[in-house]
Structures are given as C-alpha cells and as structure tokens.
Length: 197
Image (cartoon, rainbow, N blue to C red; front, side):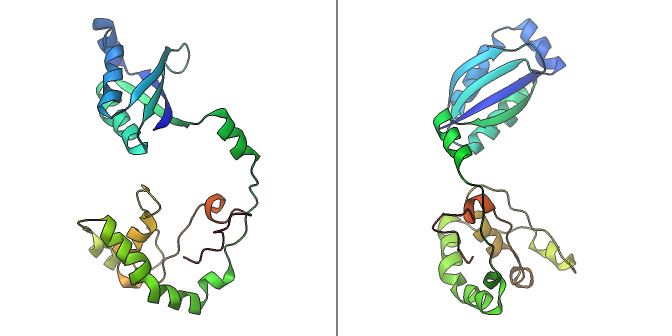
C-alpha cells in the first residue's frame, strides 16, 4: 500500500452539495474504500485548498481512479501527492545524484544488431506473457510520419518500454531510443547502470 496526500478544493457545485448534505465529506472515505484503500486522516484547511486527506491506496492507478471517479463526482478539484516516511525521504535526499552514461557503445551498430537478435527472447516473450491479449490500435497512424517523432507510453511499469517497442512498426522500432530516468538507470554506484537496452 502506498500513501498519498490529496489536496482538494470545492467547486461551486461541491460547496453547495456540502451545505445541503454535510455528510458528503464522510462519504469521501467510502470512495477510498471502494479502491481497496483507507483514509488515514482528513483535515479541513483555510487557504488555497479546502481539504487535506491522507489516504493509503494499493497503487497509482487506484489513486487516479479515486480522483477521477470519486472526487470529480463530489464537486472537488484535487491534487494528489505521493508521500513517504521521513527516514526513506532522508535516505533518498542523501544519495548521490551523479550519473554515468548513457554510453557511446549503446548506439553503435553492433549493439543495435545484438538487441535486434535478442529482442524475441528478451522483449517479445515478456510482452506476450504479460499482455493477454496484446492489441495495438492506431498503428496505421505511423504511416503519416516522415521525420522524427516522439512516442509516449502511459507509464504503468518498467515493462512499458518493451510494450512500446512491440507496438510500433519496424521502421520506427529500428530507430527508437528511450528517454529513461538517469537517476534510476545511470546513477553512479548502481550495479545495473551499464544496461544496454
């Protein structure tokens, strides 16, 4: 379970609903429970936001569902912030941010050739196992591309890059480069920092 701080502000219709039915605020907790979560604390605020709700939810998807389905229906505009305990925060802030790479060899002809040869075993297999069924819609839109383009995946896991790789047509796939978080993949001192994919 992850912890989130949800800052909310009543829209005019939401404020009207609260005045007519004050129990609406308590009903917000039921929205969290429907997402298999729990309200840890809730506070009324004076200032830019009206409510601060600290919730425990299974993942980011549940947090977004809570906001989109629930809070919007309750007449609130919301901002969701991920939260972590202070010891973890202190450890992360204390880490080095110095990065290494990416490396020149990663875009060399021989590295591209090796990746192409290994793709069925190292990429395609995992996508087929995880994505059942694997359906790609709109691939024909790439036929209109006659220059550089940016392909953006809806980030749900580290498998996203592999899914994007399998989704695009070969002429895009062969020249596709991934922008990845340097602090995750190229952080100095991390053992996997020389990853070639």
